[in-house]
Length: 240
Image (cartoon, rainbow, N blue to C red; front, side, top):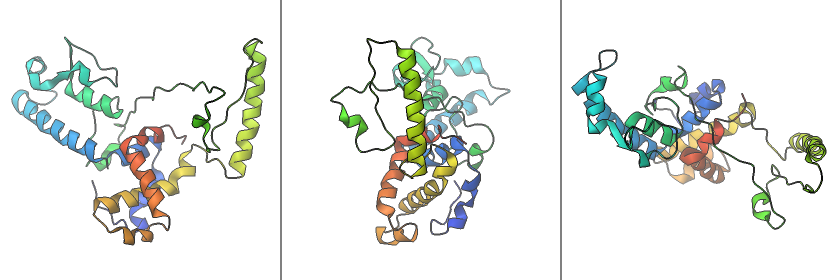
């Protein structure tokens, strides 16, 4: 990964052109666990290539007979990898575990974000059923709202009214700044700051110096770590 000077915003000018998938990648590639897993995977992959060749000359039949090319299917609970006799190919298992459809990219490869190799698996999400006593989901987040429905009455009319009410409320809260739209443009500046903080942390910079990046660097750093360590999948859903 290209070394950037966390103190210089100009070193992060490239982020002005990132789409949602690429933003997600910028945070994941800074994840220490992903980097460690990829290094271990790459060592096995290179050993397999040394034994059986590289495409298009790879002896895939012999490759598939090598136990190193597989992991137990139980290690791939987060994807749709093909299971063959209770095992899964290592590239599919690693990619699925971190949210990819395709071959997991090298975290040090700066071109991964620009050559169509980033294909994220969709998050499996369902809308929560908010019960009368379930205020925990709402919390103090102005982006969350709950509506009441009468299940003894027909739903289509209620759903249409709810839709109109939510659209009005959404416009009001976005206009007043209480809710930030889930778009790349609305998040870009803050995400750039968070990348700089992660790079400063990786470089072992003393906390006292992080105010160079942002006065409120501490909560931003915590948010950055959350995005790096799992929240990056949400970034892939931002609208471009």
